[in-house]
Length: 354
Image (cartoon, rainbow, N blue to C red):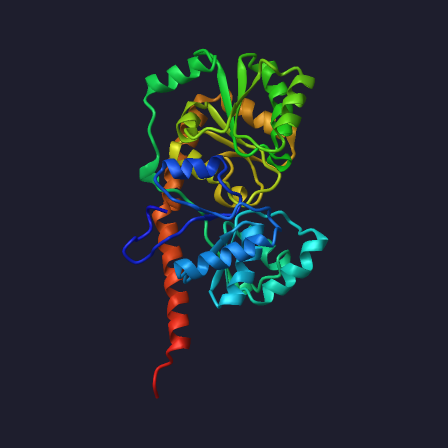
């Protein structure tokens, strides 16, 4: 948000969930979010949002997430405020009880952004949005904001986490959810450990599936091989301590952590889930596997661990690929969309005299 043109745009961040961990990180970064604080389908969201729209004289609602997109579009209809639906995940289907609302709101949705082409197709076929309304906009990241760890700092953090100089550190970063593929990663680790007994899997992130995954680690007798680091505000630094970064998801939009991995120049092994398969090229920027294919995942990890020259080549290609997703380009595209929406609104409100 600080990268937006603050002369032309006043960007307000409004969180439906309240002051969660992510919100606290934003506050520490100097942002001042507004909070609704209600459940996804609580109608009080609408009334709180309407108050904010009027009080702050909001011109455009840019909504992220199911609850925000639902209440944001309803509020937009009631107030005449243009709405942008920003879809970040391809869930492949929508629960039956949500479909009538999605179909109805889809008739009134004029602007939508999708973080990958597969996500765009989900918006069209799963959320009933018109094809001409949905534009692909890969997230990217502000490359200049990527902190750089020195070799000494990397080794110090690895020692702090119990990883010796001969350890093979594989890292997974993301929410602990069933579709993120952690279970597959644990099973692949069992195979990797047969070849590399000092391999360890660092799991960065937290989520609703955490307790299930911790029990699974015990069942698989991987207590020494898996380390849960929890939610980390310094994840961008931590990923630079990985030997291999693994993306085992079954479904995605395009994870922000992938852009960070590219910017860090990490050696990547990833599933071809959705946006990951669009951005990465096998044996060029990453080693790829079909989602859920644990044997191939394990083979790719073992192959990369045993081929230092391949790792060097993948790292260099990752850094080059990161340049294609500079966040400044993403923000410029968003601002151009805002400008088009405002120009269209002004033209309809003040038509040129004949």
